[in-house]
Length: 226
Ligand SMILES: C[S@@+](CC[C@H](N)C(=O)[O-])C[C@H]1O[C@@H](n2cnc3c(N)ncnc32)[C@H](O)[C@@H]1O
Image (cartoon, rainbow, N blue to C red; front, side, top):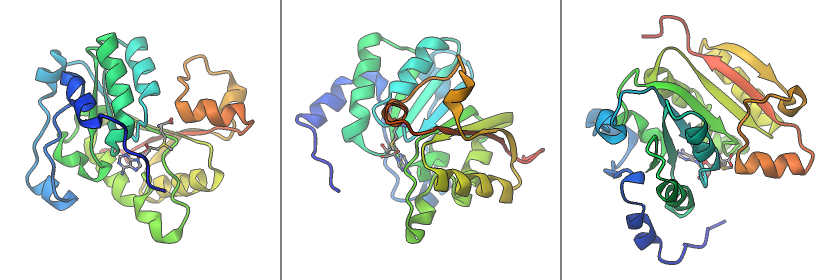
């Protein structure tokens, strides 16, 4: 389904100013890796605090709450749709959240923006499950994406995934294991655990209010992965 383009989108994106990072467009993933245009994280955040990354941030509710809750941590929220990300970037600008930035990019290009070992944690929140077999390579827990996460993560750091989709969760679990990742935590009903630290996303509110259980796992890359 095609999404209706938001009114005045270009002007709104420009008005987000420094909260929406410049997207030096790469044609494809191979080119991004060959000719990286790394974000200067120290210049952007004006410190060297650890960086958390959310891939597929949608309207950015999780990113904003995370940035408010953890001011000593920098946060980069990535989303491929400008139409969607604009709401989050506008809110971050209004709130002047200096530890939060948004980037319009496809996850396939992340190695072109971020250096090896520069990320402390990656969040995959309610990623599109792409249930059709022919769309498998678009799933954000597909083997090719796990290689990217392994490349980006600092030693000892993890991916946290939440979803409402049981089949996608099973697929992801198996995908992590088959690439040698260790599953450190796994639940099929996150909200039954009354986890005080859980930050809800827009999709999480929606599915929870409809009575669906939320699946969560935490996975660490193979030991000595670099
Ligand atoms: C179902 S929404 C979830 C949004 C938000 N994380 C939440 O939990 O409310 C998934 C988002 O991931 C984005 N997405 C899907 N594939 C992506 C990719 N390869 N790179 C960047 N974003 C992607 C989609 O555009 C969509 O906005």
